[in-house]
Structures are given as C-alpha cells and as structure tokens.
Length: 306
Image 1 (cartoon, one colour):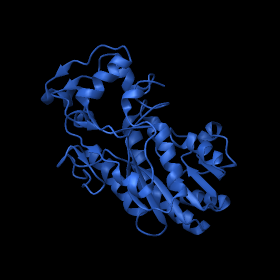
Image 2 (cartoon, helix red, strand yellow):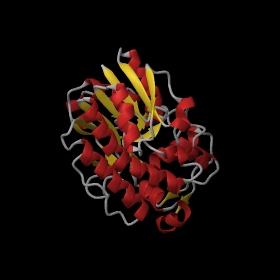
Image 3 (cartoon, helix red, strand yellow):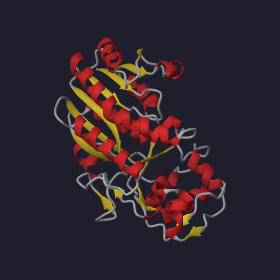
Image 4 (cartoon, helix red, strand yellow):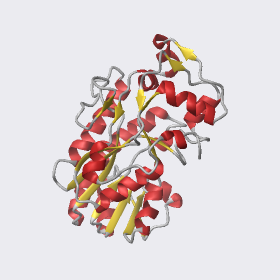
C-alpha cells in the first residue's frame, strides 16, 4: 500500500515510517524544508509546509498515496517558545488538516488517519471517560480552550466523510524523545523539584508509550474501521500515583504537596488542571472496533526511562 506520513520527523511520525515499511508498505515522508535533514529513511521524501496549500497539493500529488497519516504538530518548539508551539499546532490541526484532506482527495487517496489527544475532555462525570464525552471547548483558560477547539475541528474534518477517517486520540506520550523520558522536560522539572503535587493529586492521566502509538497508527492504516478512538494504556492513574512513581524512577526528591489554590500560580492553569481535575480515557473502543491493544499495558514499567 502507498502511504504518506505527514509530520514524519516527529516523536511518532519518525518511527512510524520505519514500522510501515517493515510491514511492506511504500512510504512517502512529508517534511518541511527546514526538517529535511532529519527525515527518516523512507521510499521517498516530499517537502512542503503543511500551512502552504499549494505546496501540500503538489507534494501529495507527487506521492499518490492510498492512505495519508496526519502526525503534524509544532510541539518541537515547546522548549523555546511554548505560546508559538501551541498556536502553530492549533493552525496545523485546522488549516493543515484541511490542506491534507483536499490534497488526499485530489491525489485519489481513500483513507486518512489523524492524531489527536485523549486528554481534552471536560472535567465532568466519571473519572475515566469514553470517546463520547464532551470536549473542554469552554475551558476557562483561553490557551487551552483554543487548543481544544482546534482538536474538535480536526476531528470534525477527519470524520466528515470526504475520506475514510480515523482519529487516534493518543494518551500522554512517554518513551524516547518525550517530556516524560529521563532527559525530557517534565522529567527535568521533577528532578529539579519544580513539579509539586497540588491538593490530593486527583487528576487522572492516561499514558501511552510511543511504541504503542506507532502500533496503533499501523493498525489504523491497515484497518477498515473508521471513527474516533482513545489510544491509551490500560492503567489510568491519578497524579497522586504517577508523579511520586516518576520521581522514584528518576531518583529525584519526592514531590512536595502544595494547596490546590496556589497551584495555578506555580504551575500554570493547564498543568494544575491535569494534576487536579483531568479525566482519564477508556480504550475499550480501540480494542473492540479498531482491533488494537497496548503492548505496554501500564506506564509503571517504563515511565521516566528513555
């Protein structure tokens, strides 16, 4: 099968190219000009900025894919410019998705597999939610509300019916090149004692190893299933469990506890939300409809490692 991976230099996109080729697919890697040197080994590399409609149309036409995989984000900018990272990622989720869909249809592709996130649900109802739970589009923090609205728009476009659409809502990624790897940003904050535990640490996190994100994308490429799927491990956990565990794995000081009402000033709104009120994501639908299950059922066996 001819597959185009957009965002092929990313945490998931880079190993995904190799995994698809190992399965016998012919893979085109779509990258920006500035990332050309970091492109993975692929059957061909095509160059376009996903926000440039004409460039995307030309690149996808040249690749002639049957399936397009959308792994686009700008989260590589998080270390240097977090506002720009989130703003550009939102544009990629809205404008970039529209460009990919138009280009895929023009090139004769039949299927689109797109990454999303499993931690955008509104904090209401059960501690662990399925895909039908409402997204937090009216979050009180403008930045997070904008992010979630972009996620909702990506999912709307992908499932609108122009192509066979699959949305993979990845859990919080850990493993190589992620923030939760030993050398990652979150791990660094824990090692420096800069990530305290607000209140009782009741916010639920659903994690996902990068290898399982890649495996889910391969499954989605080869499947006939469509729709929105939570792609997470089997062990949703409150911050009161995973954060001290991460500290132990890193041989870091135990996280200090702080009153929940002080946390936004110390950590910002989003991290406070994640640690105090976020909901986890159930992966039942991915198991039964998509036919995927995690090979790493719990974050407890690899969080904080490379």
